[in-house]
Length: 205
Ligand SMILES: [Zn+2]
Image 1 (cartoon, helix red, strand yellow):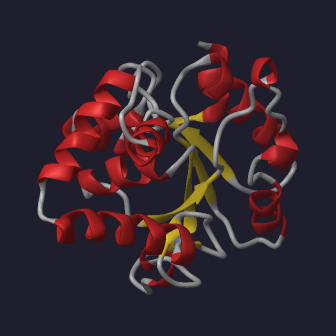
Image 2 (image 1 turned 180 degrees about the vertical axis):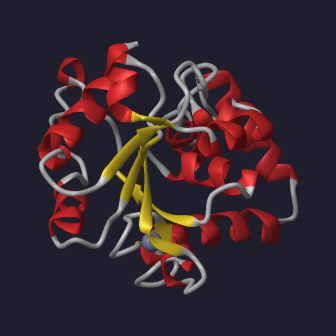
């Protein structure tokens, strides 16, 4: 692609770093920004900059948050002894949309995947094990989706905490469509949380 402007070329190159955005789409988006009022583009740039500079990760659950502790962890009406283990914020959003869960979350930030070089130490697993060791948890619900990576991660965590006096459960298998909780409809997902099954039972199926 030949550009008549280095500034344009730089913007297109940056835009095309985003997933699913090829050079042609990047050019279309950048030209769109150029046609918009300048203020709109600057607001987009500001929003991105502020997000990167100011966003925090909740000190308790690791969810993306604007403050030290996220709104869910800070809510006294939530049951802090019931913890749902999820991969990332999209799962939190999907489960929150069901209004079926009144416990807290623990966001791992990924799944164990030896193929991609992601081991247990790359994830937010140890703080979860600590919470269990300190006796602050009565039940863990695994909601990682039934991929091989999800199963591996569930089992790894289960091994770490199985000697402690807590209940472990999992949402119904096969619940994730396209391997992402975010694509599952709210009613099905809500039901699968309410009708969760003991983790030990899921191991045998
Ligand atoms: Zn939190």
